[in-house]
Image: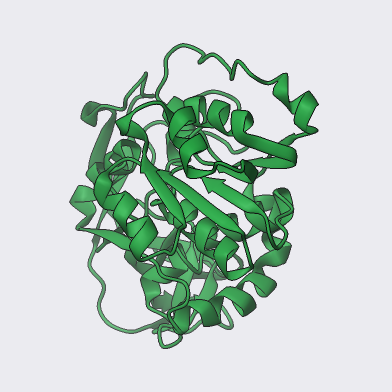
Length: 340
């Protein structure tokens, strides 16, 4: 096994102690000291440099049956991470390489080499492999182009548009010839970002009043595509403004994640008959075949500045939980990243 330097022995990692009911509470989690793992045959030891916190993690903290297994109680949680290999017991990955993997919420991780993807820190900042060039970027790309069947000339509405996925959806739509792109966000500062930096044609603060009315004002000719990150009143508003043959791609419904009672559905679903509209949910994991095409097309847009991105960076493993809470509150602009 190759090893670069003497390694620390203590590894800090976040454990789930209890399944949250409603909004998560600090006492549901604990930052635990454990031993730094020794990589087994075919594994590498990674010193994590950047960790991802994402809305979907809230679902994994519950015991409800879903598309991915729930986090286990009293064990370390998981999430996207990128880091430096500090010991290797695997062919093809050497000490000093940087890799993307799925064992976040901890300082050091022993990772099967087959589950580690080498990334190039010279091609793009390491943190971007968790966001604009990573899972959130591919989510935006696949959801807009494949699930929503976007085509040139479409009018596109995006909720949660200042988040990591939403901001990219709107910009990709513009780059591919959308006739109009409208976004909703939760603050005037984010609305300004959407219009002035991301190039949205219109944007509104959903906290300012009736979402349906604000959307009609922003998209007087209706919308052809709605990319849903929020659910609730945004989904109902989008159905109300949907043009004939409109498509709705359901990526997430963050407004419902902490509800303890089932939320009522949109009251205007019958309008889909009139518009011949389509609603389809999707998971990025079903679209990894698009990854090479995504990197080939989006990478140059990021490098030459045509596609802008923001990151909200929180420092320190001890603040990992607070960063996650921040995502649920909507504190982040762009991708929420924890830097170790």
